[in-house]
Amino acid sequence: MPGGWKRSTETDGEKLSYEPRTEESGHAELPHSPAGTPRSWDGRQSGSGDTAPHYIPEQPRRSLDEVVLPDTVRQRVELALDLVAHHTLLYDTWGLRSIDPHRRGTALNLYGPSGTGKSLCAEALAHRLGRPVINVDYAQIESKYVGDTPKNIVRCFEAAREHGAVLVFDEADSILGSRLSRVSQSADHAVNVSRAVMLQQLDRCEGLVVFTTNFPRNYDAAFVRRILTHVQFELPDLETLHRLWEQLLPEALPVDPGLDRHALARESAGLAGGDLVNVITGAAAVAARRGGESGVVTAVDLTAEIESARRARDEVGHSPEPGTPAEDTVRRLSQAEVPGSLGPSL
Ligand SMILES: Nc1ncnc2c1ncn2[C@@H]1O[C@H](COP(=O)(O)OP(=O)(O)O)[C@@H](O)[C@H]1O
Ligand SMILES: [Mg+2]
Image (cartoon, rainbow, N blue to C red):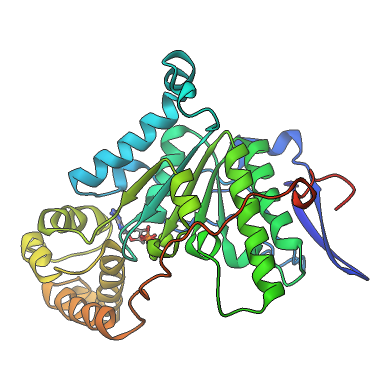
């Protein structure tokens, strides 16, 4: 029985309590995350009627070898790994602590258009470091009970520390954003307390925290400074698209042997890796419907799906709002506001 956070309903609201993992449920038995979408929050999906949020570390499955990136981006990712791998050498032996005394762990920000591999890369970083991953979606730690959101943030960090896990905040702009101006005063205050707690936890955290976002301009300047390395992900260039086509077509998928991956790369200009996944899946479904001897994915199938993916990219959804100009609106907490440890006072 894996440990985790359990939510129970009490007269004054919902309460969380932590059930420690048992010896037998150590890292070796961590659940594998589903490919490409590591999930660590299985409360509502557990089917057990238990609606508790669980910060459950998962063993990352996808490796950096699977991540196809232009060289410039790859080098930034490698630099991020160097920062983690050589932390002690850099800060203790080579004296960087003297110019950066408060930095304990490493925070990274992966930003760029949707579908360019940021979440995949976050999982792969954990894989390379040999650590489990805890994936947190802000919508899931945000609580309707005033004061619970900051506690949930503290709990994420506690769980990461307990398990030596890499903590990943997907769509992090919602938590790292600047002060909201359209909300009521008390809600505004609550949001800012949450952000201040985040800042405090980041300062204390000794592990690796990875933020990903499609809306980097929404980040508050206080967080921008705290995050040691920002890695910009881009839509793939022609050469990267070609490598993506080589990488993403599964070996077991029956494809026309004459398929020209260079032509596919040219046709799919402007699409991201995530779009290609949808294209391949759509084309595979079309081939499956044909079945029999014609049940093979052809260039025509893929071209049709590429066109439809491009239309969707242009017409469905919306581009990022020009973000709130980054201001340093997150203030430090007074001692009275600092949520305590997870003792009985919660
Ligand atoms: N750079 C990439 N290299 C390899 N696969 C990619 C890449 N970008 C996207 N993909 C594929 O698309 C899927 C979705 O990408 P994801 O990491 O969720 O994008 P993002 O987090 O940037 O929106 C991945 O699981 C992977 O299969
Ligand atoms: Mg993502």
